[in-house]
Image 1 (spheres, rainbow, N blue to C red):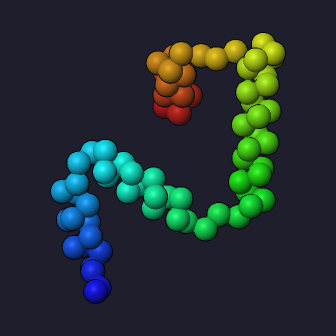
Image 2 (cartoon, one colour; image 1 turned 180 degrees about the vertical axis):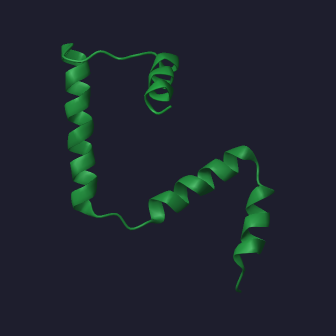
Length: 74
């Protein structure tokens, strides 16, 4: 059985939020990813986490971060 994207989209939009969320997660996971890229991101996440935990960097509240970014790009 063959479905068009439009038919699948309409069916997906009729799902509950929880089911749509699960579907999105499965679709994202289905994309081919390069192992080197995944490994590089994992390393970067670990590095940033270690910086936060050691106090080498500090976190800003989300509202402050957005305000700084808006000011920088205006």
